[in-house]
Length: 170
Image (cartoon, rainbow, N blue to C red):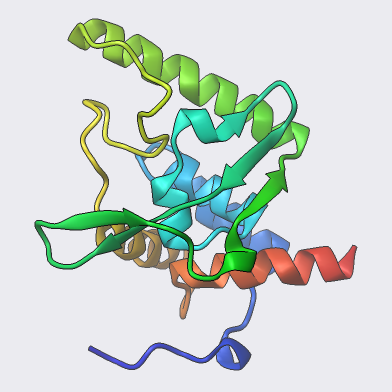
């Protein structure tokens, strides 16, 4: 496995590159996790641990209070975030709130067809049947979708740095 690049070596994406990546992901199960990542800069573990109870679409925020950690391909655990400062409330822009409302309605409709209701403690980013999305599948999908979009050197953690860069530019 190649060494993970250091933060100073990670180049953020341009606005145009973000749009290309999200366009490539649009018809996949990875679109909404990538969209939230772009808008919030959450770590992969924080993103995949989010439940519907952690988000308030009316007040437009989400709470980061846990992370998914994998110990093998079969076993995962929910643990506190990486640091104490990682526990935080993240404001959500209206565009993201509208997208997440649509996503929730879509999830509820799929679950209704399966005869299972969506619960507050269900993970936001799960497969259609409610099963857990493995963190590595999201990371690999991000790389694959970036390549499809004609982008090189893009991985999931780049989106975290992209948000920071865009906020500084504003």
